[in-house]
View 1 (cartoon, one colour):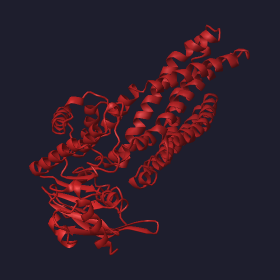
View 2: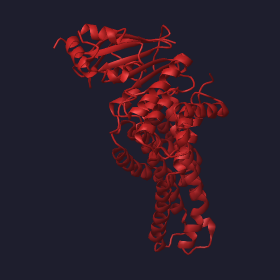
View 3: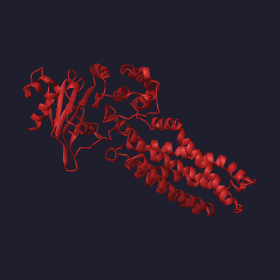
View 4: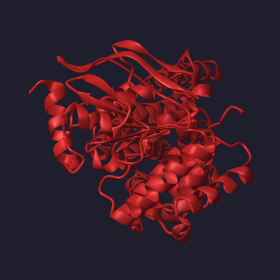
Length: 247
Length: 235
């Protein structure tokens, strides 16, 4: 399944956040979305989920316009936007089962999907613990597991690995990579650094000054800013943003 | 895929309520304290008809539970950060409002029936009375089945509207408490008017109350949209 944003314009008051942005998220592909804080990454993802209707432009799922009222087709989108919230008084498996129950009518199928997901995201050990007692890492993993629901074909994750320790980050990256390749979903990850997305993305979008720039690889970025391979990715990122915004 | 129903949300709300011991404690405390105060207040009046106390208790339970739960319905989701996840679920805004209101209505009506079952005993014991017909008569029945259901829908819908637009749970609770008090006064006067009027007038009043309930529900339904929710995200 393919999710496409075509010529999207979004403004908050007089500030134009997205100025004619177009991008595509394709099946079995991991797409990175980077930009500074406030660049409009979350806004773009909100528009992609149809939660935020743009001033102009279209969101297309498999070539057909998608709106928030199109409940049957919207079911194929899984997302984690901004700080994820959970029902702290419920257990990990209850939280997941609640959100999965919208996607599977049969409770036994739902329970099977929950168990599979808990295993995949390494949440099995805490499945009966209340979410309020969990660490940030587990909460984040649960939020990502929620986005990968049984019907999902397109997954949009807003900074899913920021604030995690290297072990959890590495495990989460591996899980997301294998899920994308095996189940054929289209995955988009946003981040405010290149480091998080290195060796993970098939394609990269950089959001700067309300406009979106596409890169096929990290090498293309390095060559644009004339950065040697030894150069730190943070430094490459700073140069890249300066180059794209003309500062 | 079969169309998702409101069932998961209703069951989920009850699962959350079951674990919310503070809420149960609040309801029980209000019920007994308010009930005892009402009985104490009218004990000196030597009233023949004590059913107005029971009617008051039922209206208190109906409007109190409906406003409390509906105020929390969406405001708490926003504070938890689960509102966006709910809006992303394959459910229409109508289904979302219906699910929350169904949970509110069932719980509030449960409270009304509990009052109907236990209230007469409380009133008879505290009021030093023995004749049950002084408590359980037409006024009580009309309140339970005529005035409380539309009052629950109106209170629930108003709570939902406030809950959707409030920036915090405290704001939502304060605003719905005020509207709840107003609603309680209206429901008590409707119940009192119904119990003394002929059937035709009573029917007209009930139809009018349901019409108001329908329109407030429509406004509540329109309030649950990603646009409103993203404008008033929780802290």
